[in-house]
Length: 392
Image (cartoon, rainbow, N blue to C red; front, side):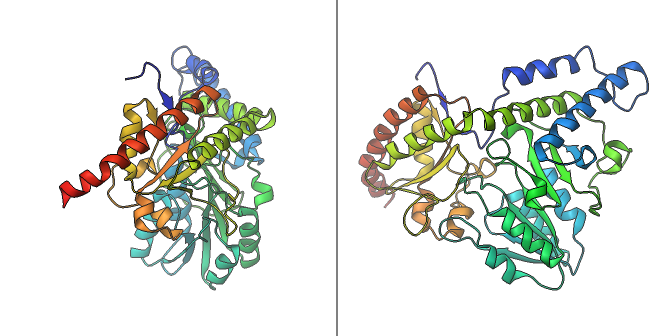
């Protein structure tokens, strides 16, 4: 086992950055107050949350009062769908959404909500014209992700936002995988709700935030106290909220100082190196074979004549962490619903791996992966006929 490991599964989760830990630390120990308390300890906590709300508002480009802190992306997605839709309403979403949206849509369908899931183009892009064609008189909500968690493909959310506005429908964006990788501007996009999760952007697990445009009549999932202006009951996770704000601040700097451009360059070098192997291909390309717009850190590649899970394990043993798809479905025997919706045949969908780089990734990390991937692929392809004969 190598002494050092290379982590290329950032779309599953990310480590806390040192500056985030430092910002959080006082709120675990010295400033432990409940932000709803009127004494000094409570008001210190309240001040910390207020400052964090200002930072996230700048991150979203919205008013402070339009930021709601919660537990993460799943809660945000659930709140948008459950909080707006009632029986006989119509929901338009896509076949490549995260399960936090798709499973919620299935529950709502059982309760009488009409649901349309638009398929992507083979490139992984959603055609806005298909969203427009899916509109009905009772369409109340359109929910489309910003960046796909498996392929990294960036969706044309501004154009879809204009379609929603013309139709008088509410528009929700799952921005969990886009946050920190692309600039978010809810005013330009024209959405009513947008969800992010801390642990995808170097903040803690269990904390997130949601943009809720003023006047959007979304009902809270949690009821109880008057926290978050009665939009999300429950004592605030002060340390987590402070950490999320610090991570957002660092993410904004990363988008300005060239960090994400550097990550994109590393991703491209990794991609080109792997695609130099025989029997490989990129998921997320247009008709000309060129990559469509993607999050800077993500690539998804298929390896013919291989099982993706076997390659994940082989690379893990060599000290490289990657994924066969969404972390929420790790270990699942079914191929990726995202890749199948893009029209990839099951065999290639099963053989696909996602490489997602941390923003702290280095050239040495890429060098290491480009050394071990060919070795693992060659070894697994060499034993594949033997394994197939054993199974037969």
